[in-house]
Amino acid sequence: MKITEIKPCRKHETKVVADGEEFLLDSETVLLSSLKEGMDIDRSALEKLKAESDFSRAKSRALWYLSRADHSKAALYKKLCRAYDSSAAEKAVARMEEMGLIDDFQYAQNLSTALRDANVSDREIMRKLFAKGVPSDIAKQVVEELDSNPQSQIAELIVKKYARKLETEDGVQKVYAALMRKGFSYGDVKAALREYSENLDNCEEI
Image (tube, rainbow, N blue to C red; front, top):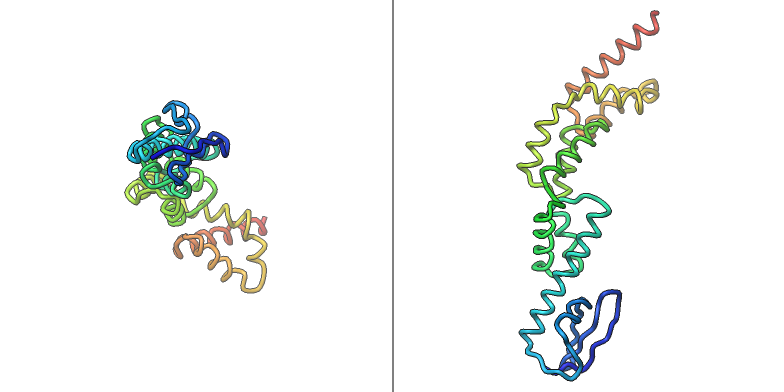
């Protein structure tokens, strides 16, 4: 194949045209490979440069994603696949893991702890971890280790969010339904509401 055009087209990217085919390469890859217009190159060599370029660009994008927020391996891979092929995305994720920038277990621990402290139920935490791409075995382990107190969580939610609603018609039923949609069990909701009601009665008697 004969290279007929080498032209910068976007930041850090260069378009290389060979025999009418366009290849978008990382500019550094083009520079290091000493590509020049008019030179002949095997398709296999150009495809290899394309793979190296995609890997380099995928690594840069991965670092950018991780600078903005923590990710699970699966979530990072999925995002990278929007712009790069699966091979480049997989290699970039593996490189981030080697560098210690992604760790599914630590990610799951941090996220689950933050959610528990925000009074999110264990069931809902598990659902959110799955949605973030955390493997099921890791998600189950970190949730089991949370040592949550669902009745205490529910009590805080009632005070912060549902106290006024309990005073309205059908308020109790609506609060029951809302809390159970959040993943709390019927038994825990019932116990927390009973305790809240008893504390309220005691305060009114004083």
